[in-house]
Image (cartoon, rainbow, N blue to C red; front, side):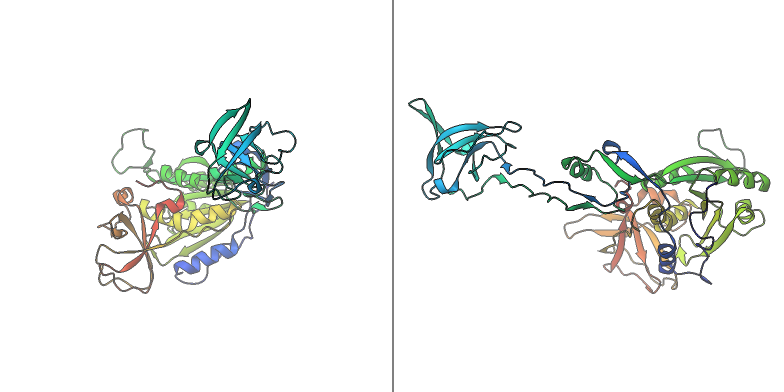
Length: 428
């Protein structure tokens, strides 16, 4: 039987309404990687998290080589003010090096990527050279003003043998795969992908496409959004479906899901109400903690563990689900998966709006549109604040973060802007 990944009191909250940064600091201090390691084929490793430090086994390039097609020669045989007329004494191509050592005063025809022949140190581009024949021999006219070492890529110029390419916790990008291939790495030791179950609950919740709504029913907007957001963390998603309003049924399903999922994410399950069967099920099977975070949108969240599985209960409104996931669950899943805790970059940009008489004591995340302009751009706040308005998420390019002590925003004030691209979400 799998053992719990984290201590049972991992999510035990501090007393009272928590500020945003307190919640972040608590998660950062108590969350640690839980995923074992496995070998991954290089071609399939993009987005995976490196488990060990990877060092270059040799120099890159391995040999000093030509950066262009042209003629290789020794700078000692060349007059920089007058140029030089040199006999062509051979040819070198990528994969077919020049054999031996070039004669003094001779040039070698060389193609891009070819190993630079011993004794030669500079390459002239072929389009700058003139080739002629004299008594059956080829001569090349090298133009003036070439610097010694021109058009040459030196061994180890890109990487030195033993140099660290990536540390444990690095998330591999497409360009990183090129770096690994350049040193001959075909298999990478990575953390396995986290398995995250997505749960919807309630007799009134209907999956889109199943059937037309009856009075009192709603379509499930959160599950497809959460599944995509989870995938952006690099984790695998498991669709656990819609669970009915039956305590016995929820307890049975939660117990079964905890056997195969590392994390279970629910929406609308962060309440202490008598009819909140998700909360009661978690309490009966494991440990349950409620966090009341001083943020808008958001505030109520549930954390806990059942068996080895970690459970996160998000608010029910789609905007609150989206914001709370990005701020708290996204970095948590990255860290559990083996990556370092990711902190999204904030950009200070002028506000294109006024917001007077703001309520103090809570951090707010406003849906924002970035308006590009010649002076560097401004951000506009979405006009309506309702946490059920998905239209605001569709219109937004990111979030404006306003701290607990800011009483008002005046047009032109610098505000903290977090673009959605910080979380791997494509720009509009």
